Length: 432
Image (spheres, rainbow, N blue to C red):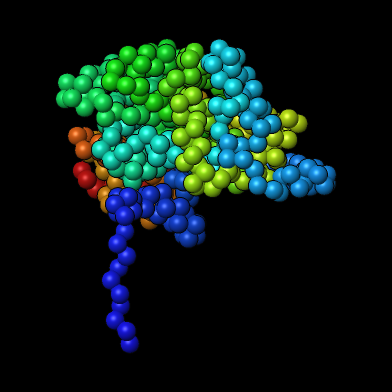
């Protein structure tokens, strides 16, 4: 028998890349019967637009010419009529004309989900050792991608109104004092109903943060505005985008998606890019795939034009509002009297997440007693530790957890929170 050959010599990037924590959480949710997963940020399965998609797809394929066009390769930048519709859609959301932002359909790039756009921006802008500023806490899947690219992450504090402008200014001043301001390439913000906290960046802070970045010096810093949850609001509509505050289309990338407000199976997202980034991003995307799924783009163009998309978003707002209210009511019932002000949670106006904070002595980490107790009780959450880092200058906080109400039925949300509360109280009693 031949000797086994040595292992492959993986690239430095492959060695920096680890499995996202969500992989384990998703697998456990699928494999453990009876487990209520408040972890994975899936969308509501029962409201996926099956009938609408069947009608739209049939419409595309019933016209032979249209069907052939949809089934052929598309362009790297994306379907022209879809990009025009998307720009008009953003104009309506922001209440600002495209000309006031100095953008045209040629600045709109369609991708395979907004996640691809986030990664493409990293490939275009980041060399190993460059610095990316994120909130503390932040979207852990993207910070994992940044680690893979070799970026150094610096985290900036946020509060109930989002990233704190004074903290961002202080971080940039500190980097300037260290001689490292020139290494700062990107500021990343999930600014609508943030993953993981559910917090929305306030209207008053949007222009201020952009002003701080633009005045930092040492070359332009790209502001990546991840607005994946923007349209899933359940109370008042959220404020206009950071992009709407930029009249010259110079530094802000606005990334949105169809995954959360319509259908993740279509794997389609889009971004409005500054002038200087359109060409580099398209060159990089051509190396990836020469363009995202053309058929999906034709379907989505019809969904926007015919009103199916807008109607479905309204359905989701009603459905998720019911689920959010069920989770907030259950938390109040089962944890409202647990250790006073030390136990608290966010009350999001939209999105899919509630962020639960427990007393400092409670360890919610994946290796801690609470996670194991919750799993034994038949409920799962995302440990907050995953959402802090990888800023080597700060220690991840361990007394938080992310709870998602997106994919769980309201009655299961109530039962899941009840199971979680029992596990929390059991572990707390044991620690005493």
